[in-house]
Image (cartoon, rainbow, N blue to C red):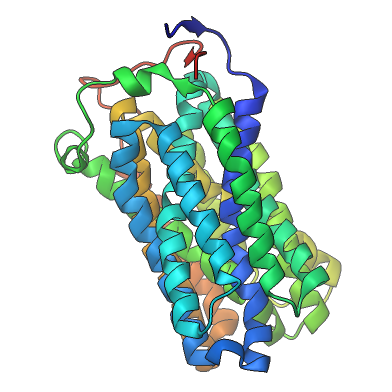
Length: 410
């Protein structure tokens, strides 16, 4: 017979969630690390147009996955969703290593993206279910450090194994398959996700009292991911256009992401104390100011590294605070759906950001114009958050218990 206990969540479920998010970080950078090799060797039929199509299609797959799987997780359980999605992503990632041509390579990336797209929003919803509300912001941002840690580890691994690009996909797929049984047998299931009523529907997101909330967080997520992906894709080129050397340009990209990890740790602590909406808006304002500041060429390279590090602190954690805010605005029975739609619509910004910046590069306007575009985008996110109430609608607010109820039978 299933029994439940009320107690603070153990550390290991949170660590396992961190690892799941790290798989998303792997996917963020793995294609970028292998594209130079595929283009130089023309292996599988890759050329610049094909590489662009594959990269875009993969992001579309992730976006569709985030939009469609969230409601299923709310209905059938977050743990089951994670088991299925991580399994499918891992198997398809392994298959990429033996893709015979660029078309199959791209198709496998799309299908893997469909599965992976659900992992991040469902994992955040799961972490929120386990944590008391007073620590939800910190738990969300700490979990998201796995995203950047996975990206950095994958980049370092690529340095070691490239030009043998297949090894990267073999390692990524194998790592995912190792995680699957741990999710199934070691990850507890929050009881309230099974007992919640009524069942989640997408219609709830656009019905009163959630319509304004949903539109606001969708716009904020779109703008936030436009900046995140635009910077991660084109930061080295922007800094080269500014007159910094190639070595510094790559170093500044790593510095930007190091700042992101620091910012995620800081943002959660501050948000839990001062209010998530207030801190998210402040973070986007500071991100806009710092991005505009980067348009000024500094002669002191040390100051450039400091400025880029501090910019990373605010840019990336501002976007994650949007996710943390969502978990406080919607009741548990629709939380995965809400996060999935925010992440899925945000992925459209992830696609548009690199495209817009790439266009500016081709026109010779990327520096300083790219930084001005990013700064303006961050301010639009502030405006979107401003229209959202700071708390969940009183009529349907669902208070969280001091400690999550966990199904110890698994």
